[in-house]
Image 1 (cartoon, rainbow, N blue to C red):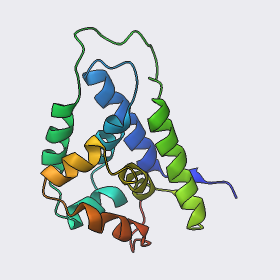
Image 2 (cartoon, rainbow, N blue to C red):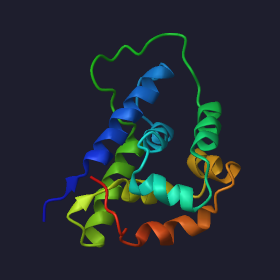
Image 3 (cartoon, helix red, strand yellow):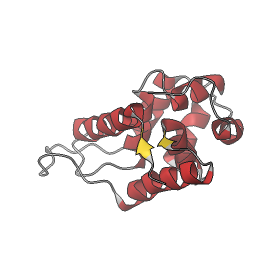
Image 4 (spheres, rainbow, N blue to C red):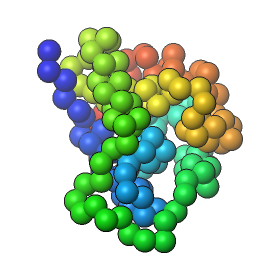
Length: 149
């Protein structure tokens, strides 16, 4: 079975690249992945966060406040590499999709993967924004009525 990333998942990865570059980072980390998800608008992950009462602007603000900013542009040209942890989370999203017998890997699987670790800035940012973080994983595990592109 060959999984395909949804176009929205790909846009989230591109937005994560942009977020990392805006902060002059040399890599894309887990927080950048979350910022990428927040930038996707009407993705499965964004809908789940809204249903959990998470204000995307508050989550993004809390994440940005937790991230360092460099004074110098990254030395990397082209796409920034994913940090080892971010790469594991993207791979984890693919594994989650396989486990649920999905042929497409959508943003909800990336958010599920991001929520696996209870001690992350992502969970803390969601919590600060008033989200019911514990209610998110079961909701994300449900197949949405409107799948993303």
